[in-house]
Amino acid sequence: MRSSRVALIGTVLACLFETARLWSAAPALMASHFDVSGVPNGFAPKDAFFGFQLAIILLIAGLAVGLRAILVRVPMGLINLPNREYWLAPQRRAETVERVASFTDVLFTGTLALMLSVFELAVAANLRKPPVLDSNLIWLLLAAYLVFTFGGIVWLFRAFRLPK
Image (cartoon, rainbow, N blue to C red):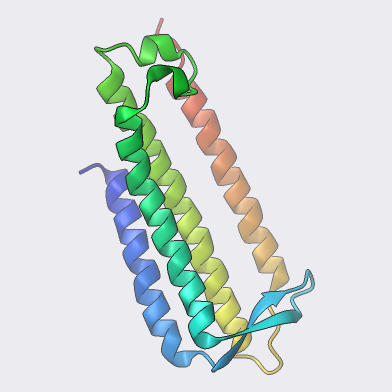
């Protein structure tokens, strides 16, 4: 199993573990939405808050697994990849699909890590009286995620250049 898939599975398990751990510490009514300055402007019962978190985790994990299965079956014309005629030629298609699937595993791992961080910060905010979210840290996380995503896209384009 590729390290990107191991990282994805590990992150999914960490998210599930943290959801279970935070459940017991969380109040019955949770601030579930915050304005730009970190002040809550929406509330939800604890089960709805954590149900949404579980749904996001399972959706992202399902997309990661499903995308690999789709990549194997989708016609070449529907895959948008630099130099696709070269990289999706029959002798290279399996390796290319594996590389793209590994890339998406890494991207989904980063997305799950962002979601876990945001949910952790939201629960931490709910443990304060009054609840206030550290909006500066949220902006920092979003900036880091954008850099991560942009770096991944640059890597993808560089990885699929035509060989010399």
